Length: 323
Image (cartoon, rainbow, N blue to C red):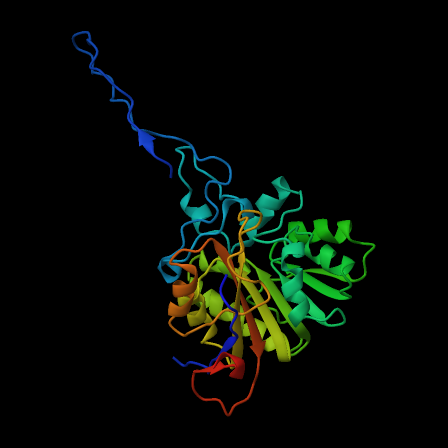
């Protein structure tokens, strides 16, 4: 257990499969005049359920740590045992999620469930504030927040199928609102109309699709627009700072704090106290030094919107107690 430190980064806007086995084969005697049989092809073991937690990410996301298998489900396998090219790039497409939710109607939470994250959320989001859950799916996260006292929880998803399912399920809970919407275009929401945006894997899904950098920038730009000043964007992700900070730097001014949490129900020993920010440097070397090169954690970026135009350069601020 490390002694906690608190540090924040402030950014300016930038212009700028399983193994295989070979079946033994022999050359049978062939009657004269007939072609010999084709050789037996190499056979791959078919993937098991949850074997592919995310499809292969494009070069823009190369190097990201993959999420744990209990926190996601696989894209569609093709008959040969691999992943279809379309499915490997489909996490940002409505058709993929419509098809998936028609088949999988049971509730599912990506990455972390509410009880695990509640102590952190209470630090940054008050029960009376208006908050948005992006990529809500059929998660019970919003329901759990309402049970915990939150009064205005708006949920959006790109899938019209799951939105209709959730509207029917929670028709008697006015605190929960569901709207079909693409997070890359939230024009139905007025600028500055939310106090908090919570993202559990939505940006990660976009980063696994085509033109990932462009679509991620659109999403984060919309998040920035709909948040009021001092509003907070909480991103739960498998992406370590060397990748996710590069995306956040392209926004207007943010104060960014980093928290980590062990992957759901996997570790009996805490890596770090959830409610304490980690020391964070621009090159993420501090995280590697503390947690190792591939820690079994989810990263939580708490991004507080701050439009102070006087800040024109990236700088690190350390609490007096940490000096």
